[in-house]
Length: 246
Image (cartoon, rainbow, N blue to C red):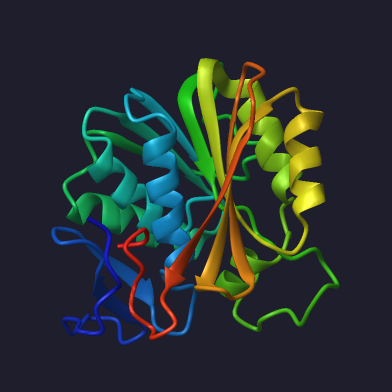
């Protein structure tokens, strides 16, 4: 089961890198001052695994250093995954993490922009997942670190690009699973509808019980259906994980 990344780490050869515990079995290499695994990664892996638990073919868009990739491959033990990442530094970590987790036989990695890559070809998938960058250009201060900037800002397109790729490569009956921030829900739902997909589920995730919305978890499919909407909190008022998140 996914759990909070441990602070304990082995001493890497590169002092910029840190090895954290991702799940009971999996570890993850990440940059100390770069993009780091967080709650949104746990939510993304959980949501995708629940969206189509019997998926045999999975496409992950903008997978970064592979935190979701590893957790999803562990949760969907019979699935084969194609994980695409555009940044060289993140892609190098992705390959290392996949290899060290002994998942290379089921996880194919590709370096490229999801909007232009040839890696997908004409393949179709039971499940497409991703956590698009949340922030439009000009909506905040760009981090100096390029890896962190790409994870937060729409340098290579935003939710619309993810939805377009998903719509092109979803198999009939397949699902798109997305985790977004809670700032622009109307835009996110428009992006899904614009490519002919249909919302199945929306979960509003609160940082704490009774607090403000922090994330939105979307599941969409290829067939029209009623939309279920619900709410969950990550932590209780006292700061412990809620039963739902645990």
